[in-house]
Image (cartoon, rainbow, N blue to C red; front, side, top):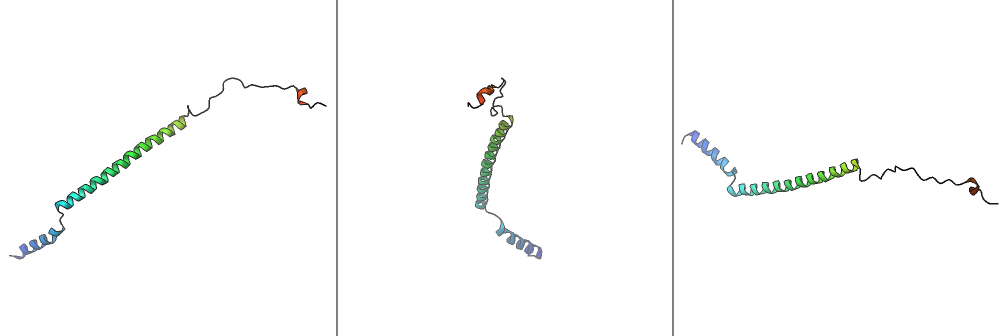
Length: 89
């Protein structure tokens, strides 16, 4: 063997142990899918929470149902004569 072939074989022998196996790739794939599913659940929960929060904020700002009714009739005024306010002697 010449020097180039030996160098190439040495490089291959150095790289070969670092390559992954099929089982390692399947384990990695399963872990990535697990993380993706957890992230999907958190994103969905966040979107639902934001939807409810912004809906509540809109209702609070709009406030038609929350504000008290405005009185349109004149207030009732009771006039007491001055003689009744003085104590009897």
